[in-house]
Length: 153
Image 1: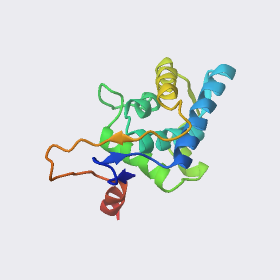
Image 2: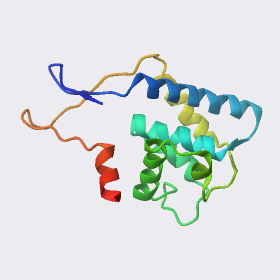
Image 3: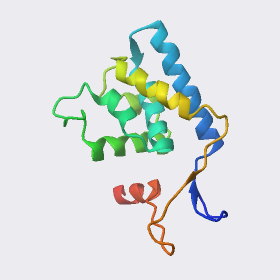
Image 4: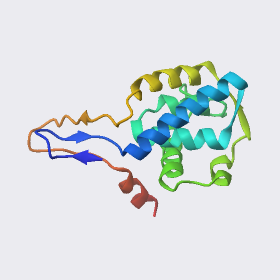
């Protein structure tokens, strides 16, 4: 969400998405204490929500590291990020979230590191408001997810 009712534009997310993502992060931590594997479909849905809420790509990268033919970071950004966005935007059912993935995947140290950092960012029960800094006082450009869906149609 972009707000312009302040002296400068700010971006945020809904309280519902914020809370769902906080709960998802805790679920991952809880599962990591029980086992060294995690349900792929649920993890992908949480990660899709996280990418949508935070724009953080490293979190998504942590669960794509198993794929063959990826770059040094482990995955192709454009294709993988679009898939993550679509999972969240369409509130994908389990069968779609698991498609072309193993049923369970190993919980990596990198994944737990990302979760720990994200939990610090998401300590607040209310969404953060982040200033958007335009490069010119008369111009603000912001690409939103709906534009991505329009391109796919």
